[in-house]
Image (tube, rainbow, N blue to C red; front, side):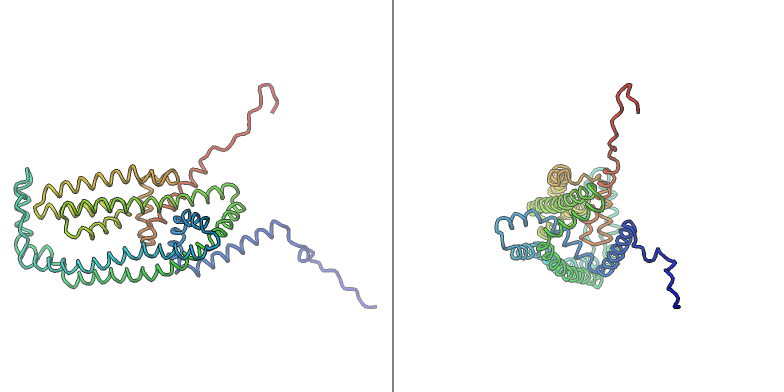
Amino acid sequence: MARRAKAPNHPDLAAPADDAVIRRRQIWLTAFIALLAMWLALPFFTPIAWAAVLVIAEWPLYARAVARFPGRPGLIALAFTLATALLVILPLSLAAVTLAQESEGALAWLQNAQQHGIAAPAWLAGLPLVGERLGAWWQEHVASPQASNALLGTLSATSILGWTRSIGGEVARDSALFLATLVVLFTLFVAGERLDGHARTVARQMFGAFGEDFLVRMTGAVRGTVNGTLLVSFGEGALIGVGYAVAGVPQPLLFATFTIVLALVPFGAWLAFGLASLILIGSGAVIAGILLFVFGVVVMTVGDNVVQPTVIGSAVELPFLLAMVGAFGGLAAMGLVGLFVGPTIMAALLLVWRLWMRPVAQPPLPASGERE
């Protein structure tokens, strides 16, 4: 008689895995695929981050335009993308061209200072308490050709031209990078509503009500940070630029452009109008330089402490230390986009901390005389 085949002694191989095990395997598979996709997309992280920040900031306007002209979301997305390119690339190009033109004047001034020295302004010796000492220091270190050449000897035509060329190369590289950003931006505009729904679903499934609330708050934080920072920086730079023109600062448009850019960084605009004030004072226009500095201080104080919190609203309530660390850390790690991504990350940290610090709802205490 033929032997009967024995039943397998490994029943666990045939038994299906329970739901918890299957769910855990799905999570591990999803995490692995997500990490692999992030690794592949790492060279494009900056364009994707730029596009995400811009689309979140512009989404309310885009949604209104789509509601006003239904049936043409692709055309409206293209219009918003082109408008973004115009508003970003044009100022950068203007700054780069102006910088290249002004570098020739700076080079001529440097060569003249190294050959003939820089005469001390007439008002310097008349300053109370420190005027005599400053005049003596100026005569020793700046006034004569030998002293000025020793002070400015590290600067040369080659170094200045190399610096301007490096800036031009950075602008060209960033412009090429921004083209990739525009492609991602157009895609996010077209698919933004669908992606928002998917993100809310995933956040709710993974973290519950906390996840969806966190996503909504972070979207508001990004929008408030970008819109508030850009609008206030442009307004501050434009107002101080008017002050440059009235006070007689040379090349007021160039100074205004750099003030707008530097206003994105904490204390950056102070450096711009402080330098402009010193130029005026050094040229003999002491009253104009002092008034310009006072005007810049007033504009920056009102803009940073009154206007910006009003524009941003309650979406972002970053302490100054976190805002400064986020801005400078983001700038060092990711470039210009880090000025917006860095504070957003800090806002996320603060938001998670506050959500965790919320008091947990306690069950009601039993009434007196009632058994527990």
